[in-house]
Image (cartoon, rainbow, N blue to C red; front, side, top):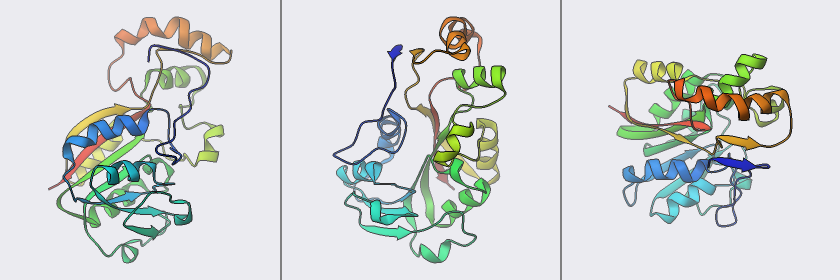
Length: 235
């Protein structure tokens, strides 16, 4: 999307609310689709109402939905696991091993991201896959926000209501993956960030829309996409 006027709201999926940024679920599904095999047993951590779970089910996957509030799950999941991922010991609540773990927009909500990655590995079969995404603090508007305000997009005071407490750069994430001997199969981006976004008026919006586009070509690193997406394999 090149130019957008007004707010950007995520659509529902088959009547299930998508509790994520606009375009994020559909983009991640395109990235993960080549790794799906019919009948795979998948654990969807922090699934919310289950919009992404239902996408997987519609493709022939067997999905267990895990959330702190499983009463909200509307997807036709195989099983429901009620769990607070910030608790010190979660493994007793998950007796099975899975072919794939969906960790979509979860790690930024947790007190200890290193523990969470270890938990994911503990319930994953050998050779299994983790699909992990988190807000991209290196995106081009986030860099401008840090330059002007010393804050990061998705991690400002107003984002605390969404539970965003742990920002992670792509360098931190890839160090964690390397430490845990996870192989990066694919690295991508998800979620809509218009190149020019006319929504409200502020000094930031003026710089974002009139000046930042000229600096964009000179930026390196993961500068696009609202979230970073990794497909990881347990070796």
